[in-house]
Image 1 (cartoon, rainbow, N blue to C red):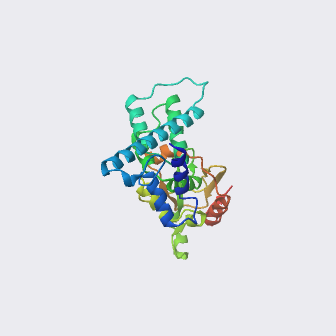
Image 2 (image 1 turned 180 degrees about the vertical axis):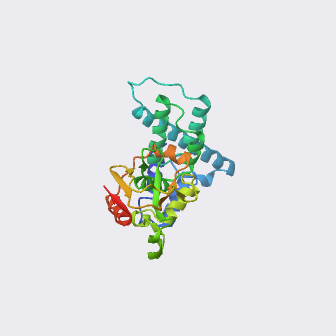
Image 3 (image 1 turned 90 degrees about the horizontal axis):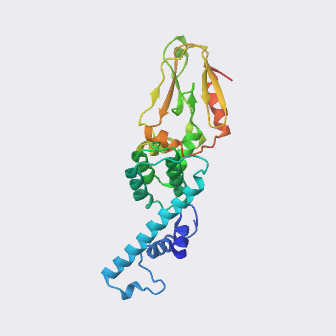
Length: 280
């Protein structure tokens, strides 16, 4: 990638230059498409076929730059004191065919980690997961990071669960409440329902909530959160948890993202569950 292309992409990055007008960004995009004058090139003096050829060369150079960046980053993440493995040739071919389309530097780092992991322990990331990751924008990756920060492994189960609340299934207590469903306000911790739908549409979360079986009273549930552990013990019977479950693709992508726990979330979880659970 030329220095000029790097500058243009940097300026078009959605997280920066918020005060730049839409027209200026459109003009910057024209430079990436080969529709603006450059050194030794003037589109006005070229035929349509010549402009198409020029744009194809720019795109090919960009794809090559993407692959080289991901490869260079992967070298940094690949340990020299671990015996390497031979990844599947078809997997490698498909990986680089998709990787050349990854332009965002932070997303390139995710792809580099996958390649490094595949060279030491192949078979952890399916082509289906790569297809999902290819379609994922950086904003959506941040939504995934937030969801993982609010998720937990329960009682040693390695599959993450995004707990959304709990429900009363019977007993006298249900007659003294307006609702038997108690929701955990995930939107207050940066994960509104629209964000959950984003992950569902991306194939990272299943589309509907799940429920545990009825929980045994006085039997603790160990919640392993990203940076802490919490034990919830039902005070009585007729209780079950509701949660969102990650798809197999979501579980694979979770290996790439290091979630950051929201300290307020733990306090919020305790406040919501305190009526029917003992918390330690």
